[in-house]
Image (cartoon, rainbow, N blue to C red; front, side, top):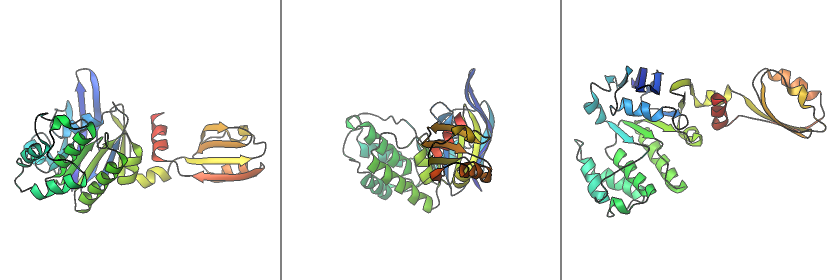
Length: 290
């Protein structure tokens, strides 16, 4: 079964673009990355499938049920962490979390305290006394305390220090190993690369690429560094070469094409060393945005 199904989901704010005919599926049990810069439409897509805003056209299903028509029932099985968290400032953390736990038809007390302990969250403090990072910890515990079947994360690590980020990733991996599906929206590509099996890239409200992480990296440009003596950069200006920089001693560029063609050019010059690397997901991502 698909955990999430987008069916040409479109949202406009008046004449302003939100998302346009977003159409892809998230498989049950996977960690799926949803990447794009701020303003690309990530949060709009998430808020629409959660029923927080209504689509202009198209639809989306969560576990086979329409996300608008069956919103209240569906949300019982969703854990959501928004990019920005806002709470009642005068409440204590423990009171807020127990209030949140009361919405679910199960006893969430044990998991609440487990998560708070992992995230080093002081349950006795008032919300107004917390830093932004600690408020984000409250959001993490709140979103996961009922052990949801679907976890939706919108820029989840902003405000967390590196240690807390790693603890958070460990929690998400643990939940996924127990069967939870994770929909991970971020503009921090290293996070997506570390956690996700597949990724959708969104640009100006439209999905421009849907691929598994391994294929996305392997089937794209190779990152090449050539070192030598009196290198002639003009010889490398062939189809498939892009973003060339350097001088007569070192050339850096990306290449996609017949590697034999490139190797003949390299062998015709006096080469001291050559390095061929897979590009990072961030470099691939920037390629799609250029």
